[in-house]
Length: 227
Image 1 (cartoon, helix red, strand yellow):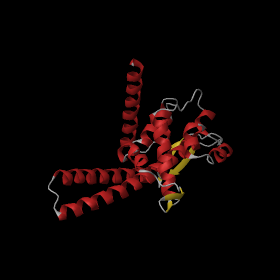
Image 2 (cartoon, rainbow, N blue to C red; image 1 turned 180 degrees about the vertical axis):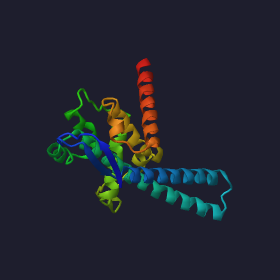
Image 3 (cartoon, rainbow, N blue to C red; image 1 turned 180 degrees about the horizontal axis):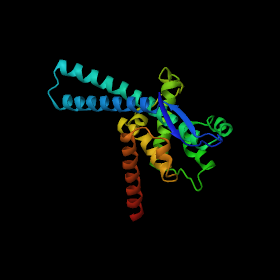
Image 4 (cartoon, rainbow, N blue to C red; image 1 turned 90 degrees about the horizontal axis):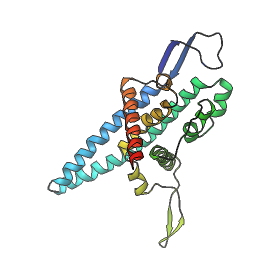
């Protein structure tokens, strides 16, 4: 549990100069980094096995590595979702009074990113770009993992569609792209609110990631403008 101990004021809290804000962002970010590193190791192992001579032993190792890779991908999806939700809630904590927070925190994770900042950031937009679609894809994958509904076939015909993620959906949001989403979300908000990065601070590593994603986003916009 992380505590922020600072001299400041939170909206709606008057005559208060000493505020302690507790959150678990470092725990979630650390878990995301750990599982991302694990996926990278597994991915390297899979590529090495695929390029070598596949003996029966190598085939078993490859199958095991693929299973572990899929499991780690699922963990990354869930932790990324938790981290983005935690970042959004912490940001709203700084921007809203208690009554407004209680209203906005009932919104979906997507709405907290796309709509809630419009309440206090003039000109805020969340356009239908790559970030928009990746965030939507993340939340859809999370739903299929947390609230799974089975797909049923009877005599080769689907009688119950379910909501299991399709391979194409999973491949569209690989672990690397998925793990970059928290920093990309914060970088987007940071463009409208220059104190946002200080308010939802995790550590130097995350701060550097946000700045890198911000530069990448601006480079893409610049490149798109040339077309």
